Image 1 (cartoon, helix red, strand yellow):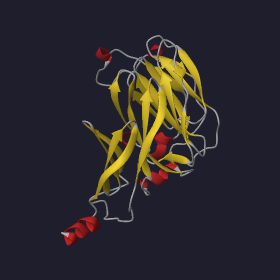
Image 2 (cartoon, rainbow, N blue to C red; image 1 turned 60 degrees about the vertical axis):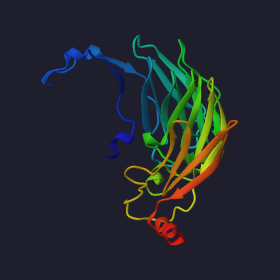
Image 3 (cartoon, rainbow, N blue to C red; image 1 turned 90 degrees about the vertical axis):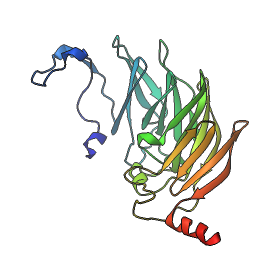
Image 4 (cartoon, helix red, strand yellow; image 1 turned 120 degrees about the horizontal axis):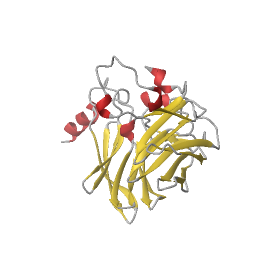
Length: 262
């Protein structure tokens, strides 16, 4: 199960026509593979965004590595051109953001969000650093981006305390959901929604940090929510600042307390 978390072996880009798929009895010809540079590091992250394959390595599920430089490779899958981009942090998450991308990773103490412009020549833009923080959720559903224009939008990601090992998101809840404004690949913080009482554990009946995760931002029409453990919190976004409006606790204890109050 954990084998996919380690970067091992060579790296190649494989392209093959769809009509060449058969019953699996034949091997793909060698010329369908294009050898790529192999990054050094622990967990291998990769994602296709537009005309590019982006990949690199980071701390992943392990303890955050103290590093002030890492490689992000951007490969044009059509012509095979490889671009080696420099980051100030590891590569722990790669997400699409409109026609561009954002790379999230740590330098051991701070959490970085680095926008990547995917034009004719890929380029890493100025990063946003959240001091003394780490990712609160490593799985894909933790990140959401809502565009509100061609080159603008709002992104959210659960965060946790500084230097927390990645695997801890399976047993510990997140401290907050962080929200950032994207304006032409310039990031600015609009605020965060913090977690309240997270001490309840009902054996994964109403909420479960382990197998499906219980921390994520939610953008529903024009409303913004944060799922944090047994709480759903609604925020109000005004003048690029987010403030808590209301929250509800749906834990067994919370439901019982509400019934007693009524």
